[in-house]
Amino acid sequence: MGIPCVHACSLTISEKQILLIYKNLINFKYMKKTTQLWIFTALIMLFNLFIFLTKVGGERLLLYVSDLLPVLCAIVAVYFLFKAYRQFKEYDFAKISWLLTLLGVVLFFLAESLYAILEIGIGSDMNENFPSIADYVWCAGYIPLFSGMALMFYGYKKGGFPMGNTKMYGFLSVVIAIIAFAVIVFLLIPIIKDDETDLLSKVFYLYYPVGDVLLVIPALILMYITSLFGRSTISMPWRLLALGYICFTVADLLYSYLSWQDLYGSGNPIDLAWNFGYLSIALAGSYQMELMKSLNERVDL
Amino acid sequence: MTTYNNTYAQQIYSVLSPLVGEFMAKGVLKSQVQRIGKTEEAIVKEDLPHLADGICKGLVVFVGTDVAQKVAAKIKSF
Image (cartoon, rainbow over all chains, first blue to last red; front, top):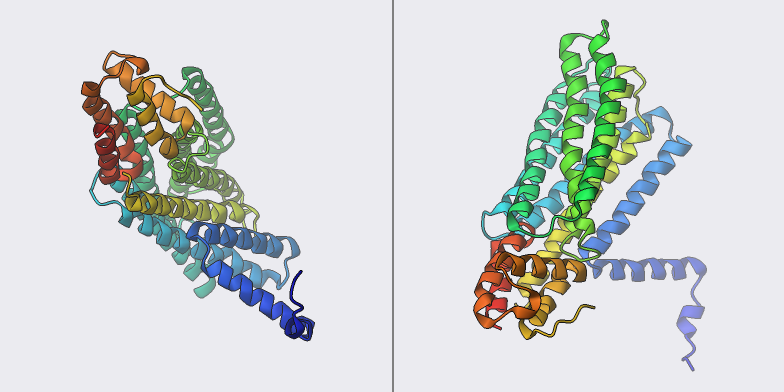
């Protein structure tokens, strides 16, 4: 039997609601960082979807959300990647590959910020002024991201852990070949043949899909390798990193196509994939940080 | 859950499975004993340093040298 709560019952509904929110906020404060980040990710994605579907606030709000939300998601990714990187003590494969991933995402964050400044601050037409300085920074970001991913794969292979089923690699090769074929036929060749696009723009339109295909190869392999680990905590960071890169690839391929056709504008649903990509990478960093902390604190090791 | 009659194999498996999962722990143990030309049921105390070093090498990419060496030291201490 419970004790009747005279005080709580005499509260008005709004006071009860405030009490509930306060209680939830206290609970949120003591949640694990990763759980908080999952909740943040869900809220950001719902907010993003709501704005795109309802277009509430008109074109102006759509522009702000489309340009500023990726900046926010990227800075969250930078923060958690930095926290993960700091957990490693020695400069080995693990620390260097996380550092390269951090560098890549820092460059992506700078590119997102430059894009927002150019479009919102200066009012530049980003389709007309393609490639902008932001595109140069984005392209530079691919190099450390790819290197970090390749280093992780190389380190894993060198470590002598099981690589999985050979047949699966055959299947992955077929998937990658189909993606590459589709990109070449539907994107690269038409862009090369397009007489209205200048040479510099063509280089950038081609760089993104080629960079994405190169990034998605180690991402798919790592995705497969991590599937061998089941639900173990050690593989969660790699799984989320791979998921983030796959989201970037899907978004970038669509962006290249839409941008080349002059169809890309603020409030395009592909922005969701970019934002989710950044937050997946942030979650990867958060899982890695918690894994390292728990292992460092374990006295039985 | 996998069980081994060999005490060392069971102890290594018990250290690895919370880290890398049961399936992978089994796979890692198998690949490491094969590397030294043995089976899981034939591990002796003298094999532990070789197995520990091999496992440490594989873990470095996930958790860094420091933690991987802690795991290796634990295996060597059995």
